[in-house]
Image (cartoon, rainbow, N blue to C red):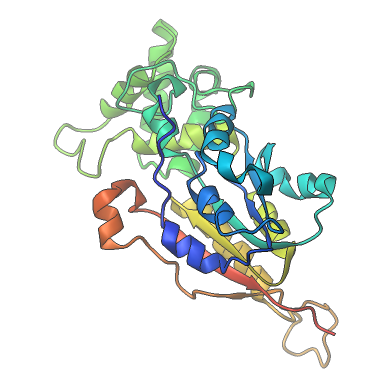
Length: 315
């Protein structure tokens, strides 16, 4: 299957980055290379794009898509949370721009064999890096009922977390839950028929929760966003697209901390904390997809784009 993925808010991201032809840019979530292609084509021979992704399929697809710009792109197969270490290995101290398009790609969802979809039957998997040990089947069949309820509640914001976890625990005693539709049907059965599809597919939140657990999507996210923002040269920009409230809250808080100056109690006569403002918010409120884009790509509906710009160091 072709790695087809429509880059979300592509024009807004490119505008946000204010790309310099000779700049150094990081796409931490390359996917099929949609955003990367638009960054790379704006660079001259003096510019450079560092493209991270932990999915081998993404590298194969993006390598072909970016072939004409191979002289200015460096591919790194790793999680963007390790990007600063990777940049150190490449001898890159500062960046002119960073883009993170978080979450799962459309291609990963649409490729049934990857086990992300709750409407296509396949073995439960959900690994973004297929070399990783933990997969969705391990989580669904191996976690305790209370552990499942916790991740459904915390990562899926699922109101019926306890009921669904109990149903899974009962069913897996009879036989393992091996496939995506097995899990989706179990979740759906926990909802009354009248309200089962009131807010979209009933398994959506549980699948999100399992996917986040399998891939450790929220672990270290705030720290990685902070580290990459501080890697920017003065005037450099970072654009982050989130798709659900949990990751958006983490990104929002990381950016907010970077905008703070002195955090000493107000009754202190002089600053002793030494905290200085590191970035400024380019957009006070997150940017969302246009009506035209939503008509073409409904999956952009929950996307939020936040942008910051690195400030010059205080002298």
